[in-house]
Image 1: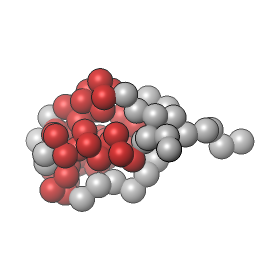
Image 2: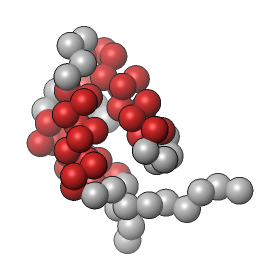
Image 3: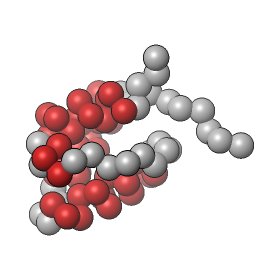
Image 4: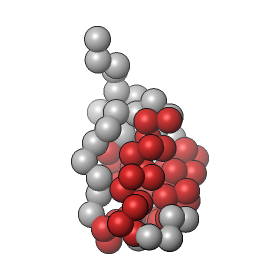
Length: 70
């Protein structure tokens, strides 16, 4: 049974973004964010564009927007 969507807090979005940006090789950041999302119980989604993965503020916004409840 699919798990219901859950919202992402700002604190968790900042934590995930910080750990993702810490990966030196930008090509591996998509793998890191996927691992972190799974670790925290979020569904897998298409990874953001490389320019978003290189900017912490934009990545936090992307996470909050992607994992919000309408």
